[in-house]
Image (tube, rainbow, N blue to C red; front, side, top):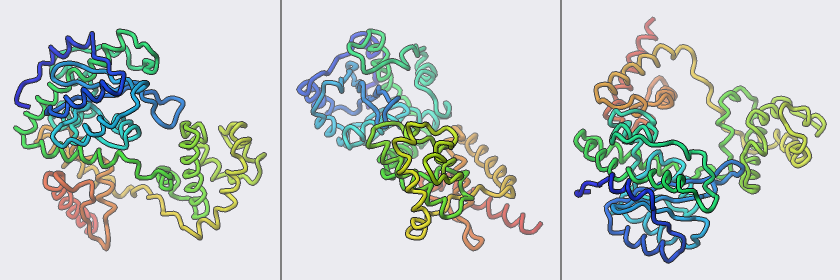
Length: 393
């Protein structure tokens, strides 16, 4: 990234982006991109009535132009997969969580190495979870229109406004990345950014495709007895499988609250099931017997495979220690001039406290890596002081 990226030149190409609508053209450009130091990526997709995202567009920017890849016409993505595997080509995205999920769904591959301008903005103290428009205005002084945010990206042809909006979503990313990398390196934080990006990549492949751990997201269900906990686990896993098979959103099968209502009310007949709050009659007709079957088998299921407990909320006694630990973290974030939420998340503190074993505490995985040296060890020392002080009172 020695040559500065001319974002104004790329911006000027957004009115006439290069369309890639066949496999041969895609292969041609992918071959060209292989020799570059970086490319910018973005996606547009629809996910309203389906479980899986429906790709509408893949945008790419290099040092010369903006490109719109049409997934409604491309059949062979092997060149893109090879591009994603190129270790010498940096792939730049903004707030790439959903894009990574789509790429993994489409290609079974993730873009590596990967740079996220939103994460970088947090490290530079520009703001946490900064939107693309605000980032572009902050760094480059350009005000972007948000007009096509809810567009239909599956329609063809796209309007000129849609094309320009999609192209501009990648036009500024190369220059932003270049600016951010320089500042991160100057502050000694580029390796931190790389760790965060790798964590995001590691978390993207679905680690629970059968949904057997989904029930643990129901934090309010920690009091359930084993039989009801097993029913919640098994029904949640069944819903996950059915949602994927039918390609419909989870709440189209059963809403989370409806799942809890079923487990709490424990209906024995379809008539009783139909009286559960918010359940639709069509759901009872289609899946009622299956749902009741899981309830009937819950006791046996709990014995055969006891469900792992859902973590109970931390006791109120931790309120003051948590407040003190948060203050320590905020002070460190201010010293480093980074977004406090980047340095420490609430779940990190929760995980730290839950490491207690025989009165001893240790750093959880989320406070390893760069966080261990920067804040983790200090938090651990302060926690021990706070605990000892509380025990002496």
